[in-house]
Image (cartoon, rainbow, N blue to C red; front, top):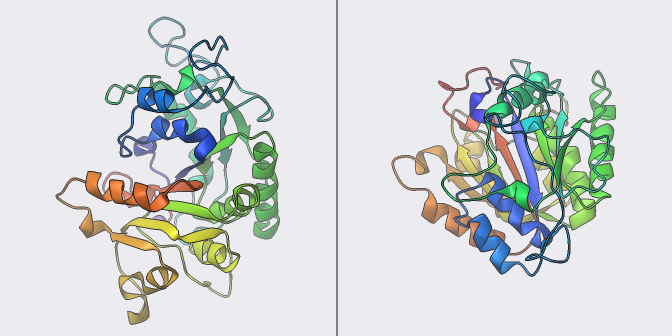
Length: 309
Ligand SMILES: [Mn+2]
């Protein structure tokens, strides 16, 4: 749904072995249908009886039979809103923060705008057959509380907010916000799951050491993550990198390569099927926990020109 948005946005989730069927929710590239996953899993993740599950899951209202499309509270897909992640398998949450961006601001409005555009989404993936709301309890828990004018306090606030979600064994699907927010999210995720695999789709590697003397901004989250051991570096893939760089030392994203990351340049993605590449990355990720981060500027800026960098 981020295709509709003109801000720099990020959409993220973590999957692990317990929650593998959530993969079907956002990604066709893993080439696995919801039915496949349910068949392969031992049980429904929300109850113990996959084939006899009687639990009622939250459903987005249907615009054809339930609630007119422009009506209702503007939560994500107009799902129920609740104050915490208690009882949920997956939650949508927003982080309306863009003080870390190096050029155009505005991503703070991202969560609100994604929710508005998400009214167009329907619960069945017409291509894969995935119906995530049949087996996952999902709600919108609103935005994280952050001290918006203080970047250091905001990092602590985001970490705390994500910890509060993980406390309930819930998978957060986080809407940014600029990429600065990924650093404290990864801190909380690593605490819960251990060092993380990462699928990072972006025009930029976001592995700078600093800018203007500052170690925390939207260009540094993955350098900070490496420094703190948050990533399982052999299970990191950065996809879609492109554009100009500052110096020869950055050529071909040497820092990322030196860490053991798989680097896929944007021009390596052009004019061919990406299925083989994603199969390779799926194998690279193995069975460990994986964090997915998508920066809107991975798209051609002709379609999303309002990004922060
Ligand atoms: Mn970027």
